[in-house]
Every structure is written in C-alpha cells, then in structure tokens.
Length: 518
Image: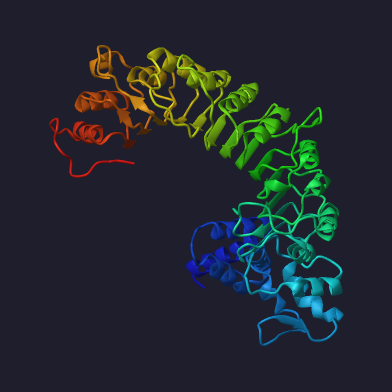
C-alpha cells in the first residue's frame, strides 16, 4: 500500500472519530442548516445515511423544526385517511403502534403550523386521549394559526393545541392569520372557553412567551396571571383587557414585552394598580387605542428599564391628553432609548399666542438617552411659527445620542438654522425626517455662511419637504455641505434636482437624467 493511500485511510478514520463526538457533529450539522442553501435538508439526510455512527445528530436537526404534524400521522398503523382526506382511527391502539411515532416525535422542538381552512384537527385530540401524554414530548415552541377569515380564538382552537403542550413549553402563538380585525368577535362570555383557558398555566407552567393572534370569545384574560414566568405577551384583541386583567398583567414580575392591538376596552376604567406595576417592562407596543387608556397604562409602569415605546393609531384624546402622555414618558429619562408615536389626531382650542408645539416637545427634552424618536401626531394647522435656531440647539443638546429623528406634523416647522444647530450636537445621527421651512429674508438659509457649519458625515438619509425656497441651488449646496455622505433624500423637486447636479458636478440648473430620491 502506498504512503498516499495510507494517509488517506488514516484521514478518513480520524474524520469518523471526530464526527463521532456529538458536540462537534452537531456544530457541523448546524453549519450546514444555517448555510442558506436550499439543499440543506437533503445534505443532512445524506449525512445521516452514510454513517451509522453519526446518523443520530443529523436526524435530530432534521426533525426538530416541523411546519406540520400531518406527515407524522403516517407512522401510526392504526390510522387511515378517508375519501375526504381526514385521518380516522380504524382500530384500538396497541403498545407497538407508538414505537415509530415516538422515535421521531421525541426530536421535535418547534412546531409551526398554519391550519388550512378545510383542515380537520380533531384527530390530534383523539390520539391524545389514547396516549394520555403530549404527542411531541419535548416540544418547546408551537405556532398554531388558522387561515379562515373572521375566525377567532375559542374552544376548538385551544382544544387543538392541548395535545401538544408540554411542561417544558416556553413559546406559544395561537389564533388567526388575519390578526388585524376591528372590533370584538360576535360571541362573548363563553364560560366553557374561559374555564379551558384557566387550565393552560398548569399544562405549561414554564411559558415565557404568549401571542394571542386575533379576537377572542372572552371578555377577560385574567388566566394569563397563572404564567408566573411569562416574559412576553402579545394580544391582538385589546377589547378583552378589562380593569381586572390589566391589574393582573401589571403584577407579572418578569413581563418585559407587552404588545396590544385595539387597546380601548369599555370595561377598562381607572383603578388602583399594584404598587410595583409592570416592574420589569422594557418594551410597550400599542396598535390602535385610546389616549385615556394609554395614559392609565403608562402611569402604572414602575419599571426602571423601560426602554422602548411604540404607539400607533392612538386617538380619542385632546392636545391636553397628549401633553400628559408626553409628561408620563418623561418619567423614563434614565432608560427610554426608542420612542415611536403615531396618533390619529387631537383637538384643542388655543389662542394664537400659545406655542402648543413647544408644549408637546418640552417634556421630551429630559430623555437624554434617546436614540430613535418618531413623532407623527396627525395634526393639521396653518400659520404655525417656525422653530428658530436656538430651538434646534436645545433639541440637539437634549438628545445627543439620537440616530434617527422623525417629526411629522404641520404644527412642527423647522428653519434651516434650527436643523444646522441640531445636527451640530448629534454626532451619530443617520436619518432625519421633518418639515423644513426656508425663509427668504436676511439671515435665512440662502444667506447662511456654510463655512461656519460643521458637516455631519454620519447622516445618510433626509426627508424634508421644503417650504418657501427661492434659491434651490444655494440651499442644495448648504445641504451637500451639511451632509456630504447623503445616499437618500426626499426634498422639493427643485432642490432634489440641484442637489443631484452638485453631487454629480453639473452646472447649476442642469436637469439630471436620474436622481436619487427616496
């Protein structure tokens, strides 16, 4: 035997021994899975078939993430599919019937199933009744969603997932694919359903994440308080969050993320909340709700690590309510890093001498840790004064760590000086979106000395509808000096064209064939 052949055999022998070590073999298999190749399943299957010593690890990875439990039903010999495509039990179960089924289901850790509209899932409950233990004994995460429009979470869908719940379960997503449905379901107050929900904490006591997708046929979510280790809760039917439920949620010690859609329950009234309400809350996400209810929620938060607040389509309040909400947010000046707020509008009768725009922003000046600020208040006003340069300087000094700034509403008008002063204080800003009003009198943007303005090289995107611009080329030159690394912009058409000309080195007034507009 040649030396080359001996070396080859020795290398193969060493490779087999190395892959025989479970930890190394698993890392190799996970690298194949995470490679992004469409053939990763076929590659792992080939690895499992080529060597008995290393077959177990590829099989585990192949089966640990399932998108449907249906294929595993074929492993039960006493099941038969009828003409409608529905499995039925044709004879009683025997001990040996479970051997192949259990051999594969023990590998499953994640189940993500989108229930077809015509599907029938009663077979899982029937099998569970015969087995008397979870169908997938080591399942950690389940996503069980229906695809039928206008369906809502009720007894049947909860009964469908119970056969899969385990004591080690830590993540549940259950409900309807059509999650954003306005209004509560037609059926309310199902006592049987509520009793069934109350059993869930005993079936999976270690649950850390729960997402109830879609409306529910119940008026209370008090059962959630039984999940003492719950860290993330997402509710798409905020109509069922009554005062008792909110008080219960506020007492969850480890709840760090709360997401609610339709947070405007008529049963939600001001009440005495626990002393340490939401003690661990870090992220709050509200889609559609009323300002008074949101004020109640923010007032009750006692967490010192509250860092992200996302609010969208909140209405039903006045400017006074908005000011109170901003003042509540100011309490979190030591922790809040991201604030995204979109309202549907508010009303208030004010005299012409009242600067209500400043009144709204002033409380937020205490949030010195902000990195992302987005305000879209949905308000329309005319003849609103433009913020002077000193106001932009105050903003920059208040939010020195800001990276993304969006302030959209006709009540907020910024001068070129205020923009320049703002960016001079914010070394990390990369994106700005605001209403820019350019004056034409002395001291305006067209008369600014750009040599005195420090460029901000970090900013790559700006969206600023220009109002009152008469010297587009001059303004474009100022913007190019301020933001030399701009890659995306949306300004007025004239300024867009002149900015492209300056960047491309064309003469003033030349029309570009193509401009970089967002």
